[in-house]
Image (cartoon, rainbow, N blue to C red; front, side, top):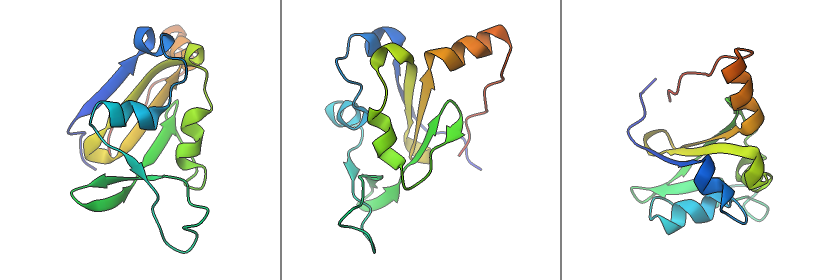
Length: 121
């Protein structure tokens, strides 16, 4: 396991002003990363579940409230949330990981009902 090398985050106040929290567009606008199709056997139906890193396609890992999203669902899950339901969105470049935290999950952490996971690759 590695520790993250860089985290780009959007917090609650910034997310609340967005019409739609399109994570791919958020990353592209900041010049951080852009999503691409991974290619392969099902490339015709492939969601943009990879990013370009150093000229190579790297598959993203996506977590919602510290739970991994199934690879087939991948980036499609990123557009499923209303900005009012999100607490923060993090992109961890060194791990090619997107972590989404919902308002309800953060309230549970605050109440001591759950513990957050450590952010490692």
